[in-house]
Image 1 (cartoon, rainbow, N blue to C red):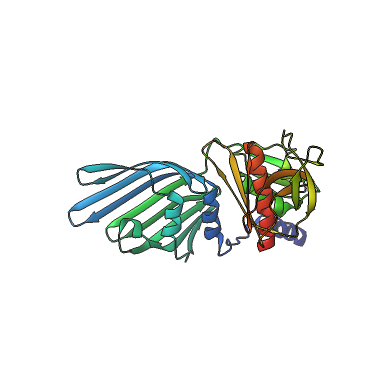
Image 2 (cartoon, rainbow, N blue to C red):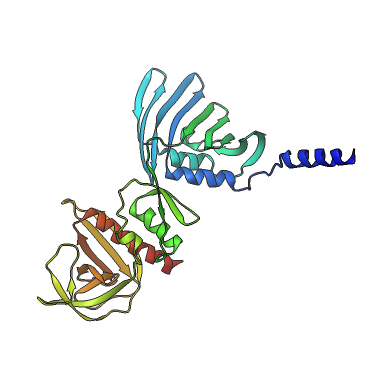
Amino acid sequence: MMRWITILLFIFGCTREVYKPPPPDFPEELIQRLENGFEFKWNVKREKGDIQSTFKASGVYKGSGDFQMNGTINIGNIEEPISEIDPYEEIRNLSGKRDFLLISRNGDEYTYSFTANLSLFSPGGKEGVGRLIINQEGIEKISAKTEGIEWEMKIEPRKGVHRKSLEIGKNIDTPTLKKRLEYYGERMVEVKDNRIYFEEVIPIKRDGLLFKRGDYSTYRVAPAPEGELILSPDSIECYTKQGSIRTRIEDTSIRLDEHGESWITVVFDAPIEESLIGVQIDGELFGIGHPSGETLRFTVKNDRLAKEIYAVLKSHADLINE
């Protein structure tokens, strides 16, 4: 008899669910993840005296401030199109106090309350009671109410985005590779074990600069027909090294000009007096130019390569500034 009691206790003990509440910063973490992209349906109703206003919108937030929205606002009998309200920024604004409180759980669904900032639809500011519903896929719905205003946004993961994974090589550390992919333009970059996962917004070359060591150096250079340095890629320009420059990169930026060429701007930690310098990555010359104080600008005609150079140098600047 005691043997059967022991067996039953063991079975029930093993199958009993042990509930562990999410960490306190769980809602804030999921809101931050929305910056990588989501689809939404947004409805707001506002009543002030005898005037009722409604706002309805739907669309997709692609990340980094890039979004598409089709919306309309109706005030009485007047209807106007709205397409320029950043949905992610408004989520951040609505939940600005970040005072999330878990109030209920139903299986894998959690509901949090928070103090809602409804200033977008109430000039001068107005606070209300917010609700955040989270399921297995992430945030499902955000809503808020106060006197005269009802705010609701339903959220879904982005559809039709290709998710890719690559094995991480031994020649680059994981945090640096993650930064490079993000600066290159990929989204939702995550690392699990020895693989890196991301949404491939821009096609990647596995043998490109992103996956190489990415060691850079700066030299004073001079044009020379038989020089040891050839400006990459596909160039016949040759240069010789005139001496190493002891400086570090503090920041890097990239932009397209009106001709479709990429301009890369590098900011060093000290002024450079040399008239012509070159930047090498893994021993290959990728940019030359005339520095202006602490700044160097050079063009790269190949768009993919320009993004790779920017991502590699920008991640170096991050390591220095940390």
